[in-house]
Amino acid sequence: MKTYDYLIVGSGLFGSVFAQKAKEKGKRCLVIDKRSHTGGNIHCKNKNSILVHEYGAHIFHTDNEEVWQYVNRFTKFNHYINSPLAKYKGQLYNLPFNMNTFNKLWGVNTPQEAKLKLEEQRRPYVHLVNPVNLEEQALKLCGEEIYRIFIKEYTEKQWGRPATELPAFIIKRLPFRFVYDNNYFDDPYQGIPIEGYNSLISNLLEGIEIKTDVNYFQNRPYFDNLADKILFTGCIDEFFNYEYGCLEYRSLRFEHELLDIEDFQGNAVVNYDESAIPYTRIIEHKHFQFGKQPFTVITKEYPQSYHADNEPYYPVNDQKNTQLFNLYKERASSCPDKLFGGRLAQYAYFDMDDTIAAALKLAQREFYK
Ligand SMILES: Cc1cc2nc3c(=O)[nH]c(=O)nc-3n(C[C@H](O)[C@H](O)[C@H](O)COP(=O)(O)OP(=O)(O)OC[C@H]3O[C@@H](n4cnc5c(N)ncnc54)[C@H](O)[C@@H]3O)c2cc1C
Image (cartoon, rainbow, N blue to C red; front, side, top):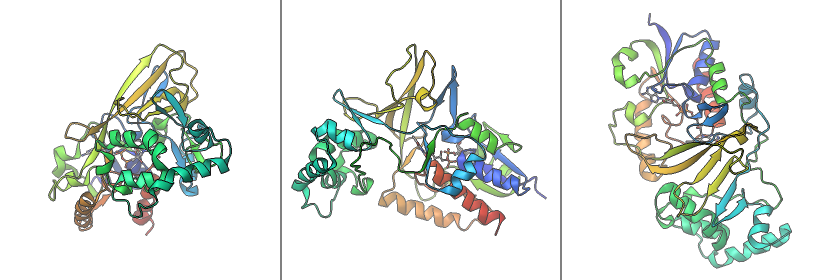
């Protein structure tokens, strides 16, 4: 008999939810992570009592009742509502596009006036029936002014390529709201864990054996012999030794600063839309927790190309990479004692609620089949 029923590679949200369900079913689990902490990308660092989202701002939101009930067993959420701002050439605008944005942009006051103005902006681009790139797609959806201020330079910074060379599918639709409402998400449930994301992860992993600073690939034969089954939540191309080639990603660099002032920007999230500013956002973490400290911590997010020394954040889900991923997926399906899950193994951008839902679904298949 092997030492464990399951070896779980990766203590991010996917691995932690799966481990919790496995333990509930009486399975013997070991969770390993190559980082020095658990939680993967939702991990926060406590800087002088401010919880800093080390790997980018994380706001929990969902319309999935089951996920909301599940996650509330392990943490309680505050009433934070995400209402980001966008800054362009010294002006601040509310997001998502709503009556506050239209009022600032065009001086319109009523939904009727805003809709007429938007139609007028779109009119020159109605001929773009099948947009061939992101620029055409955006112009068709919102016209010149919104495209120029909010989309072009920000998206080019984010992806490191001109909008005319980016695929149209990146912007499927643009949410326009004709009410004075700055709540970014439509979901009925939203918030930040009152005790922080680390408490959510440690509650999920309570009573489960964990080893951090341990990379599965550094001793693969040993780990393969340790458990009957392995759940792998790392990069799927790495798991198969890049047999078919490397999957592409976009990365980020985070610059954290502790400032000796009470409040830097009066809001948790401010996007910087213009290309002259190298970062895409500034996050002021205390606002996620309604912090009252006399100091503050901010983080600037700089988009980067992905290479061996930084983190893979955003998958490039174009045709080439999708085909490549499908080859790995096919390969994975022929490994009966291996399970694959999470954003890296599934090569997908998943919000946290989707990650939890997918881990619960996998656990359901494994333990209640
Ligand atoms: C910048 C950014 C902002 C985001 N903001 C939001 C948001 O506001 N709201 C929202 O709902 N979602 C957000 N998300 C999505 C959210 O981060 C994911 O849904 C979630 O973290 C995915 O969890 P995971 O377990 O799949 O992956 P991860 O958190 O990446 O966990 C995988 C773990 O596996 C470990 N690992 C990998 N390879 C090995 C190995 N060989 N050996 C040992 N360990 C290994 C890694 O160290 C890592 O800890 C954001 C994502 C990004 C990139």
